[in-house]
Image 1 (cartoon, one colour):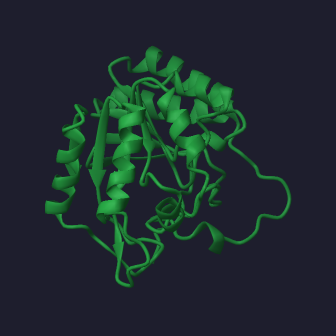
Image 2: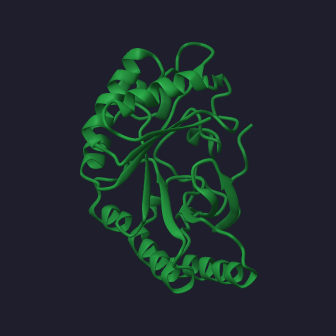
Length: 255
């Protein structure tokens, strides 16, 4: 079963395999998943199974996001609470927010005011990197973790529910200081598998063309939308990460 959608703007901090004690920031509408992907492994379930939205989407206003995060950071500072990162993620794709650039700038400013030692990160599915406003917003983040699970359109469609891969790879190629995140999964029916040699070869070519500052390889940690998916053995993840390192790109495995 998918996990419930987030009820508010701030959640956690959660202990992340990759980000330490991470205070999550959800800029998506409350209790409504907004995403332009339909990933087989999504912990929030299939996008297509969400009820159709009737009427306008009520996005959290930038000043509201600012106020909520500012209050939470102020309380954390007063209590001596340890927070390693502010991480913009949530139950969908955060860069789809129509005021994403404004929110990113505000978060950077309030972090500098209250907790200058904390880094700001974003988890994105990379589909919007061609947008000039999104790129300006991404520039405010200390760490940009950008999704790329496949290097060919067929695998991309089976894993992420999209085929428009070229615009993603081209956009990432022109975005500085990117960390590529790749979720590797298989299903019990042989319909979804981005770990086979041909799929990994295509993904490696894409990674090499992007030249990220790092790559993070991992597999399932929570129940996925597609209940037939299975975890990939750590041995295989290490093999894939080793091939990334042969390209001269640092790679870590999270299992």
